[in-house]
Each structure stands twice: as C-alpha cells, then as structure tokens.
View 1 (cartoon, helix red, strand yellow):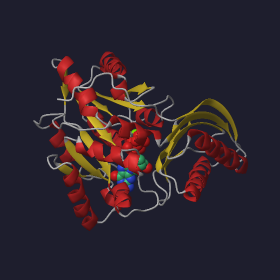
View 2 (tube, helix red, strand yellow):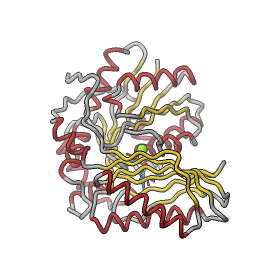
View 3 (cartoon, rainbow, N blue to C red):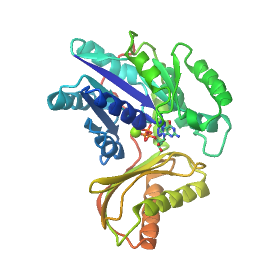
View 4 (cartoon, helix red, strand yellow):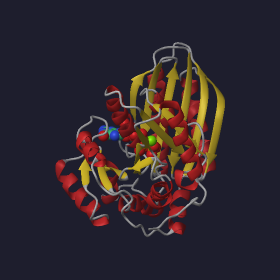
Length: 360
Ligand SMILES: Nc1nc2c(ncn2[C@@H]2O[C@H](COP(=O)(O)OP(=O)(O)OP(=O)(O)O)[C@@H](O)[C@H]2O)c(=O)[nH]1
Ligand SMILES: [Mg+2]
C-alpha cells in the first residue's frame, strides 16, 4: 500500500514548486517517491522540471485526470512497476475542478486495499487572490474565478502559498475570505519556494483525516465556460545560438510576452518555460501582468538548447498562437538564435466529461 497525495490549485499557484520541495525532502530521507504530472496536451514543462528532482515522474496528458481516470491509474501502475513507491504526489491541471468526486472517491472505492488516498490539498496563490480582491486588471474573469472558488470549496486542506510576497495583514484578510468559501478545511500558510510552513502542512496531510470529505455543488456549464476562456499552448523547439546568453534570451522572451499581454489586458494563467542545455537548465515563469517574470537556474553558453514552452492565457487559441510565434521570432532574431519546431499545439480546452463522478 502507498499514500497518494492530490495537490490541487489554480494555474500558477505553486503546485509543481511544492511537489519539488517535498520530493527533494523525501528523497533525502530515502523515501521512494513518485510524481504524476498532468496537462491537456503533451510537452509539459512540469514533467521536465520535476524529472530534475531525481524522483520518478509519470505523465498524464490529453485531458485532466478527472476525464481520464484510466490514464491516471496507468500512471500509478507505471510508478509502481518502476519504483514501488511509498508516496505518490499528483498534480492535476490547474484549471480542473471536482477532483474529489471524479478521482479521490473512485480511487477509494476501487483500490481501497492498495491506495491510501490522503486529504486533497488545494494550493491558493496569495498574490492572485490579492489581485482578485483588489479588482486589478488581470484579476480572474468570472468563469475562471468560478473554477478558482470551486477548487477552494472542495479542499480537505487549504494551503495559502507565496506568503513571502504579501503582508501578514493581508494574509489574515485572505484567510477570512478562504474560510468563507470553505469553513471546514484547516488552513496552512506556506512558501513552497522557501519551504516556510511546508513541514507543518505535510505533517497534517499525513495525519489521520478523511479525504474527499466535502460534497461539491458544481455547474459543469459554468466550469466548461471558465476553462474555455483560456488559450492553451504547448511547444518544444530545438534552438541553436552563437555564444547565446540563454538566461537573457528567455528573460527577454517572457518580458516581451508580458508587454503584449499588458497591451491586451488579458488574464495570464501561467506562461512557463524550461530550457535545457545538456546538464544545465533554467526555468522561467510568468503568472500575472504586474510582477516581473522569474528566471531560475542557469543554462550556460552551450550553442544548442531545447526549449519547452507552455502558455495558458485568456485569449483565443489563434491569437495566442500568433502572439507567441511573433514574440519568439522577434526575440530569437535579436539573439541570433535559429529555432526548429519539434512540437506545437495550441487549443481551447474542451468541455470536461469525467470518466466517473461519485458525488457522495
Ligand atoms: N515567491 C514565491 N514564488 C512561488 C512560490 N511558489 C511558487 N512560486 C512561483 O510561482 C510560479 C508558478 O509556480 P508553479 O509551481 O509552476 O505553479 P503550478 O501551480 O504548478 O502551475 P501550473 O502547473 O501551471 O498550474 C513560479 O514562478 C514559482 O517559482 C512561493 O512560495 N513564493
Ligand atoms: Mg505545475
């Protein structure tokens, strides 16, 4: 028997960062840990990034977990045969909701002897919540805000993340708003990035507590409309440069995209990229219109690199596709980089159709 941890939360809230922080800690203690990533289309930045932790990683792509229960079970089986895990941590797509009814309860009913399904944790981005509350231009629009609220409502444990970016006073206010949406879930405050508060949450998610305890009322029309607000782009490119400073080039790329999104005042769910040059890699993220993009790691000066780019933005897919292609071309020209497209998909997520839905 192994423990399964579902780490849910909206786009860019910090799920992968939390998985990475926990996985590294568990690996140091020689715990066998497997991770499951998820996305609507292949070519996942999260998979690339989490493979670097040293943990075994399985990927479910093509739809969210809830619409592909068999795919989720297959990913579990893959990890079982690879490492016979003690713990599996799984991160669903950030625009997905209704996880208790579609994944946690079906697993508990069908695999009670094999899987100990732990309480569902929902990661809440303090900064994004602050923007919603202050009605800033990139606040979530109604449909996406519906998904954000439903995720909070169905949590067994709530994990307010990025506490390093907001004031303690605002955190008290935020906790009140979160408790209004879900009065029964214990609330934890963490920084997945610095590790602050992570241990306390981890002790609690491992303590005796019923999982998938909350019954969620959800309107699938509204949920589908919220997901359909987003254009979804995943791409992988092979790059060749000449003494290219990859850190500068990727920072320019994300800065340029942010300016384009600012001009359109569009919702930035998450734009993330992973650039690898052999053993070295860097990660870049953009989660809103205001904060500068973050670039972590260094990719060195190798002439060849592989770039994986994932964007979830409040735009029609065709417009997003055009914007990203144009920005890549402009920035690569500036840095004398040539690019070969290995994979490119830009879609609008379809209506969620869960494999199972156990409401109780
Ligand atoms: N300052 C700060 N940044 C954080 C923290 N946790 C995550 N981030 C940043 O937030 C951005 C998004 O983090 P991810 O872990 O990729 O978020 P995610 O929820 O997995 O995103 P999706 O998979 O796209 O839904 C990255 O730039 C992270 O570095 C935190 O505690 N503090
Ligand atoms: Mg992620």
